[in-house]
Amino acid sequence: MLSALTQLALEVKYLDRARDFYAEYFDLDPVEATESEVVFEVGETRLVLRRPDGVPRGGLHVHYAFATGADAYETWEARLSALPTVAFDFGGSRSLYVDDPDDHCVEVGTVSEQATDGLVGVFELVLEVESLAPAVERYQTLGFEVVDRGGDRRRVRLRGPMDLELWEPQLGIADARGGVHVDARFAADDPVLAAEAVAPEATVETVDGGVRVREADGHVLTFVDESRA
Figure 1 (tube, rainbow, N blue to C red):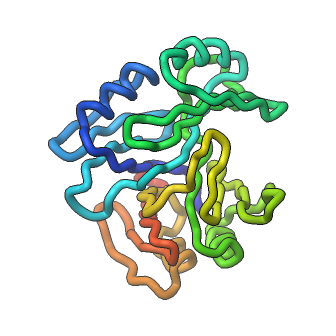
Figure 2: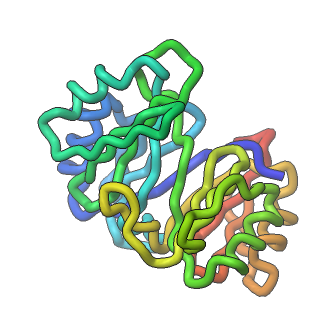
């Protein structure tokens, strides 16, 4: 049903500070900038830094992950060495975690098959949910499939166009938390059907290029036709 995560919005207090952080440490150049937003492109995903002056707001303390090449770990370890970092070895890949100036936990993982030390996309997003079982069922209606359950049964990892983790309130690796009121946009083969599936009781709002809905845990999901994404 979904083919890509096309946009992820983060709430920031100060645009200049946030933009400079992502430019300096992640080598990202803005493709758009206004008084309230700065936009970067990372693979097929637009990363939006947004001041809290309207709705939908960007997500709070969002934990998400950039993908880089399998042999790029040492390059990123050096690039992020000026920041407090947490390293984790998953066996088949390694990741570094840093907090940005607005308390979003940014992961860089060596998961891409491309031979590159650049960022090639966003491969993971973590959402905080009140109750795990109904949240998992909601996202399964969008075609996500469960691939892992945490040992304490308070988090679930699902796989779709990217990996989605659903966490009941908790601290994860690097004391990361699941995102609150996350604003994410996906390409879908049928945007209206996707919105009605994930939030059947909610009002479906028509927006430029697609539809938007607020699901039961307060996350704002926009679906756009994949032919126009």
